[in-house]
Length: 87
Image: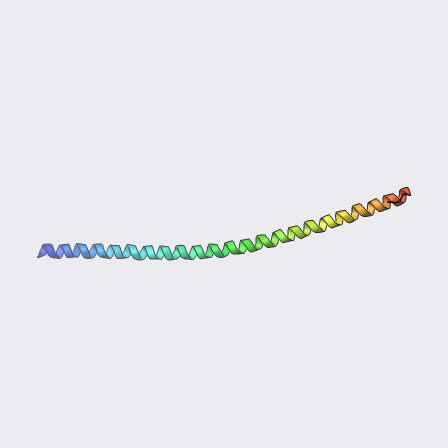
């Protein structure tokens, strides 16, 4: 009878430990899921910011090319007029 009670106590103790471990693991999985969602949101924000930056740099490059082309054309026209020849 004493042995039966001690065996039941051991099983009860082991089951309680197992349940505690499962609950802790569940909490860790929940934390991991929250961190995963947070990282996904941050990655989406980063992607949107990178796209905006890429577009801004592209437009800046285009404006620079246009300005450079206008300067070259104007200098060519002015140079030709100073020399007295036409294109």
